Image (cartoon, rainbow, N blue to C red):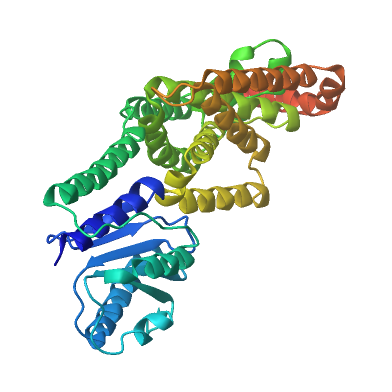
Length: 419
C-alpha cells in the first residue's frame, strides 16, 4: 500500500462528510473500510469506501456481492423499499485480469433485487477517469488534485480533519436533543390524572355539569368573560379512555419536545397550543369540550417546525414516523364522531407558531422570532375578535339555551335525589 491511496481514501471521506453532509455509520477497526449515509440523497443514500489493493477481478466481484448483502441488511433496518449504494474501491493497481465487467453495470442483490450496488474503481494513473465516473454516479462533481507522494503526516492530518468534522457534527446534532429534561412533562401528567380523579369524586368526568363547573370550554361563560377557560380545559378529560390516550401521548411527545426545546420553551409551546386549540373550538364548535389534545397536537406542530428548521436531521431521525402518526390522527379526528377536530387543528397550528416564537435554545433568530410573534398575535387577535362578534354569538345562542336547559334539569334532578 502506498501513501497516495491512503491519502485519497481520507480525502474522499472528508469530501463526503464535510462537503456532502454524510455521516459515518461504520468505520472498520483497520480504518480501511468506511460506510457513510445521507438518506435524503436518493441517488446515493449509502456510500462505502474501501482502501484495498485488488489482485483479481473475481475477488472484487465477491466483495461487491458481500457489499450488497450488507446493504440489504441496512435497507431492512431503514425500512426502505429500495436502496442504492455507491461502492468505491481505492487500489494502487487495477486487477491483473479483465476487471471491467463487475464495474460496468450495477449489481442487484439476488433476493428481491431491492438493493443496488454501483461500484467505482480509483487506481494508479486513472484517477481522472475514475473521478469522472464517480461524479456521474453521484450526480455531483468529485475532483481534487492528486500528487505522486504524500507523507504519513499528510495522511494523519487528512484523517484527523475528516473524523473531527464527523464528531463535531454528531455532537451538534445530539445537542439539539439535549436542551432539557422532561420535568414538566411528568408534572402535567400528574396534574391531569389528579384533576381527573377530582372530577370523578365531584360528579363524574363525563358529566357536563361537572365539566362546566370546573373549567371546561363552554362558549356561554367565555362570552361572559371567563377567559381562564381558554387554559383550564387543557387539564380536564372526559372519561378514562380520553385520559389514558392523552397521558400516553403526552409521555412520548411531551418528553421529546421538552428535551429539544428546553423546559421553559416547552411550557410556552404547550400552553399556547392548548389555548389555540380552545380558541379554534370556540370559533367552530358549540359543544362543551375539554382535554389536552390541542396541546398535544401542538407538540406535533413544534416537531414540524423542527423539521423545517433542520430538514435533514428531521428526515433522518423521526420524519417519516412523525408525519405518518400525524396524518393518521388527523384522519381519526375527522372520521370518528364526537372528536373536536377544530381544537386539534388549532393546537397543531398553535404549536407550530409557538415554536417559531421561541425557536431553539442558544440558537436565537430575532427577526424570524419577531415575525412569528407578529403573525401569532394577528391570528389570535383576529380569531378572538371574530369569535366575540355578534354574528358568532347569535349562532351559538340556540345551542347555549339547550345546554342551559339541560344543566338546569340536571340540577333539579340532583336536588330531588338529595331530598
